[in-house]
Amino acid sequence: MASSPALDRSVVEQIVRQIVLGNAAAPANKPTESGDKPAELMVSISARHCHLSDADVETLFGPGAKLTPEKDLYQDGFFAAAETVMIVGPRKRMLPNVRVLGPTRPYSQVELAFTDSISLGIDAPVRHSGNIKGTPGCVLVGPKGVVELQEGVIRAARHVHMSNKDAERYGVKNGDFMKLRIESPQCTVVFEDLLVRADATSKLEVHIDTDEGNACFLDGATKVELQKQEGDCKCKH
Image (cartoon, rainbow, N blue to C red; front, side, top):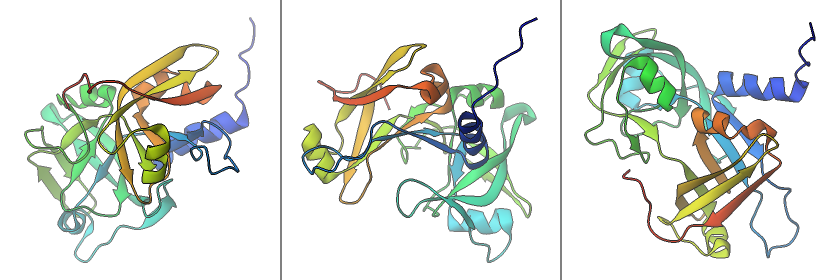
């Protein structure tokens, strides 16, 4: 019987980072020296995670508790916290050790992939982050307490962060939509309807979820390219 080929160490490390820290990033191209081209593009797999309010942090982890930064994310000022929670869905289905991302927000929100939603038995809609009105809720369990969310569970719509300068170079503006083309030896995939989130300070980075990352075999990508999308988004987010 033929033996299975050994996994490259860098691939193993990338998989471990994705599972443990919930943020695996793959560079699409080398940084440019010239100011005439967009900055380096990163495509990141955003694994299941949650954002918490200050009040919910204290309920879950104890009075006076604050999130403990463990790993800086690609966007400045954001981090994967040391804290994790258990997410409990209908009929007591659960996902343990779901990473909390910081900083805290005014409201708590849970972001899942489609397969996570199926596992929990939650019909989570595809929404842009922050658009949680009318979404399903869940129960969050921490070491010191329990929070029952009445709403806030979503499948995060894919999107691209960029600076205003990069938006100008691509010919787009905040709120527009783009396409992401990913080439790999196994397959070539084009994701449409990436929401543009442009501001003064963001780095050029696309966020897709674990299902999308697996479907396009992001780890084996040989070329990743952002393209302007003509027309409005075809999905209801």
